[in-house]
Length: 191
Figure 1 (spheres, rainbow, N blue to C red):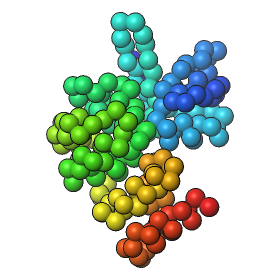
Figure 2: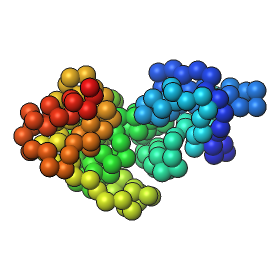
Figure 3: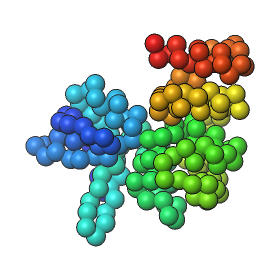
């Protein structure tokens, strides 16, 4: 098993980076937020999971061990393969995933491409028992209906879910609860 990889980033694609180490370039599939970070770095260190199939060896990389462990839990769910697991990790932050599980909000998971309501419900049920790894140590951040509306608005404006969640988390604690005002403040984060 390849547990981690460190080397120079030789190239990046839509959902992968080529990390060169020891004269060999390894194609490592990574979540979107990790890929963004790799664009600006020359050297990368990724925690990895190697998926062995009859016709391929595929490497998935993550910025933290917690992300890798959550990915491993996701792909252990029947019907969730590595590509869907990576899509979940690319679309949702760990906080969003944790909040979806704790609050039993399947609609958060349905924002992931390829996951419908039935699959989202199944994932929530499975994760309720399995998602204890590193997720129960941090407090659950508040993500109420107002913030959900703000998130939906930002996504409709073309921002990714990860970008929208980051903007919402940057809002001041005393920000008004008005959706329009919160959207305005969140948009100023991108300026």
